[in-house]
Image: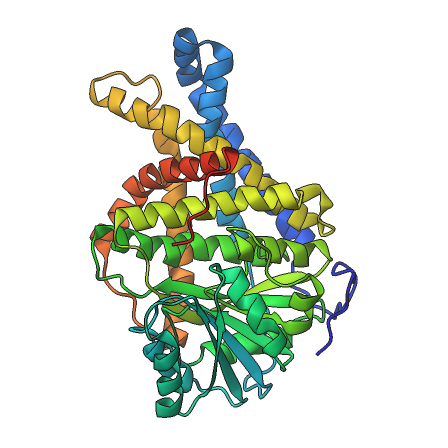
Amino acid sequence: MSLQPESNPMTENKKPQKDNYLPIKSKFLISHGVAMLWMCLSIWLSLPWLRELGEITGMLLAVVIIMGISYIPGYMNAFMVCSLLIDRQPELKVRHPEEPLTILIACHNEEQGIGETIRYIADQDYDGHIRVIVIDNNSTDKTAEAARLAGVEHRVDVTVIAESTPGKNHALNTALPHVETELMITLDADTLLHKSAIRHIVSRMLTSPADVCAVAGAVLVRNSRGNLLARMQEWDYFLGIASIKRLQGLFQGTLVAQGAFSLFKTEAVRSVGGWPDAIGEDIVLTWRFLGKNWRVYFEPLAVAFTDVPESFLHFVRQRSRWARGMIEALKIIKPWQQPIPYVRYLTSCNYIMPYLDFIYTLFWMPGLVLAFFGYYWIVGPFTLFVLPLTLLQNYTLYRYQRNVFRTLNLRIRKNRFGFILYVLCYQMIMSPVSVWGYMQEFFQLKRVWK
């Protein structure tokens, strides 16, 4: 199970393909071609809207606003829909791996939940030996004792170590010298694994080319029967985040092997110096892998369930931290420094996100208020052209996710009202929160992890 530094994923480990196989380059060009056609249609249909808004704001500002509201989001959605429709993930060649592995769980005041997390690890249908290292990161409760007791009760090989310096990166780096296996998993203390999660994520790694150094699991919402905020987030994880990871995985570079549940080659993590001191430590770590010409995959069958914020303040802190982490990663590792062409494109797209969030927050949302009073300068009939494509994107991924759930003998919970709110209202929450995260990074405000 070797990792080949500085290898070329574009030429290495190629195998004969079936006649109906569509190369990645063809998928990339086809998807962009469809997206370009959609955007050209949108521009043509919106010309009256553009002229009307230009008379009020000036043509340059009108173009900037409509690009951020309609043209670019429509282009990106069309690219994603087309990519998802033509995506065919390779079959798993290894079904029942036996490789020993280590699971790292960084904990801060997780006395109440760590036992259940370990119980779900004990229930895995994985044939290899699993060692769990729980890092007590300056807890003030009995997290360490609860973890030891759970290990004994559920017959799991649990080691508890301490790290007094607050911060997930410090906790994980403290555990890294204790890892003796070639593979390791990071898992959040409030994340529960489906019984086949470890088997599937390790199978994907063993099926992949040698230059794949990490595999991200599929993290879904555990507390989806909470309040309306949690119900909307269920669809964000189930459709939005999952679709982005599928898209990125298709083009050879999942951009975040999230700390909540991902598999890593231990050698790869050590070779880049472990987890960085960054608020988005998992983002920066992943981009460092990609910068070494290594690839990161995504395995949709490796499912885990995590708790999402139910309080609005906690949600704002989490999502603004994610937005800030993206900017932090862009400052540390520039997209043009990425050796894999598709990764250069995917990471470059992150430069557009602040622009879209600012336009949405500063123009679309006020425009929606104006529309209620009959002023359709910004929000009007033409903005609805994005909605059909959004629904098509969500339906396309829903069908795929439904097949994933059937394979795992899971049932999709009914959450229609949450879906309606997710489609119509979620972006009105997310964009301002993301803008706040960008501002935190710009003004270098104090980092808040929880």
